[in-house]
Length: 167
Image (cartoon, rainbow, N blue to C red; front, side, top):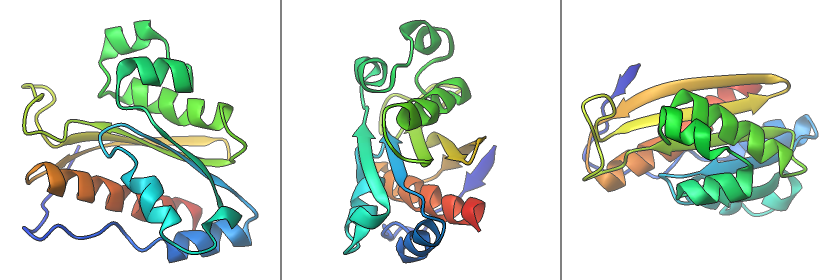
């Protein structure tokens, strides 16, 4: 697990311009599946004019029912591993691809706080999933800060890591 310290200023998510350039150059489209960020990653992408050339759609699957209904994740998988887990984020990223026309996906699920944390999954725990080509990559991060800081750091990291995987 990576520990990421965020300064007290709530920085905006990474500029998606480089991501846009990479996706357009490769003729790829992006889909997002978001839980704890509630659409912040999709919003950062669509803030860029012309994003329809590379952004296909976004799923906000905040509840477990939404994960099941929108992405096809089994209730058993969520019950067995918890919504904030590697298994669920991998299923989210694959479900996003299966339920869209995109070729690249990013998914996030986490505990933004201030409540909801546990000893094993404290506030600030976020699981990330990326699908580029046939490769699924998952990563767990622990962000410090309040709810807004955790969510902003999550959106920023999701986009920055996606750029790295596409480069």
